[in-house]
Image (cartoon, rainbow, N blue to C red):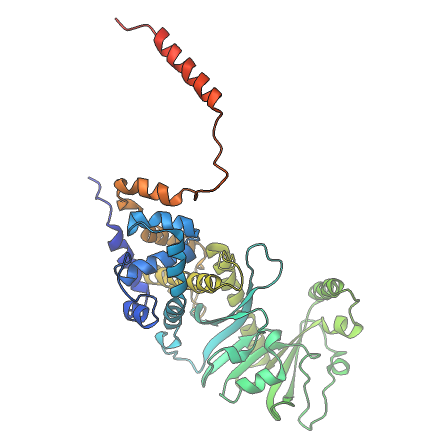
Length: 437
């Protein structure tokens, strides 16, 4: 005999296991929930946030769900309540991403990778917002997320780095000022660099020109130099090493082709020096060669690719970059933080129910979280909607809310003559039908 479906509140309470326990106090502290009106407990308000931000329902569609879950509500009321939830949702996200919640690493460093991503509003062709994310590499788990406008660039200063952190990042973060701001923490760095954007100096203080030194390097080989980077603004310098990996011919040709394509978009031919340097991968690190060899540093840097994959999972599976509200509006900020909260909930639920040993980078991996997130997304949708116990008597109220508002132009209908003629034909056919004996 099949078991009856679980009550939606019970299923929703199971979903809350992946959230901080201070949900209700935070709602009152952030003034998202000031008094009980149609929304009795703050958890019903959280369901509204997840309907709009997580499941990407429109304001009218969320209002249509309210009679099935709480009480009848207009879309303007839904919008007003969502606008008040911005600080609350941001506070919940911050607590869920708190690095202290992670187990203390037994290794010498906490391995982190930093990257940024873009978010576009409806119909936009450029960037509207930037996401700056920090990922724990062994666990492949986000530990910090910062949302900024499009004018704020990528920088290590966005993240609360501290003693014992080893940070991996791409060449956009390799600027002298950014490195000086990060290293005194102290923080170990492994950054891909551009020798044109990040000038390097020999220990005697002279500028290091790498091209003459690289001429005799064979493909698929590594060379290492002790250098330092100096910041004119901070009047400080950082000692470190540069590892240069010369690509094989095929990879070097692909890199040069990418340089030509980028230059073509900018409307000018690439510089000869840039084409020559494209045959090398340069990595700057503050980790001494006697601690980690050049081969180990280059292999570790390739682990930075995990943050690219994690962001792609957010976008492909959960549509984190598909902003529904108008860019620059208060509702857009609520949607972005709510979508990030929903994404972290999916991730934490997958780890709680499926475990994460099989996907960690510090052991043998058997799979990734792509399909697991898809599975959790379907399950979470059911928990949020509470479809199993929708009361049938509220269907009329849902239609009233979902119906279009009164306007001058009425909705299309058939002409009266067609309706009358059609009804007349139907009545005549009924009269001609023989009566059963």
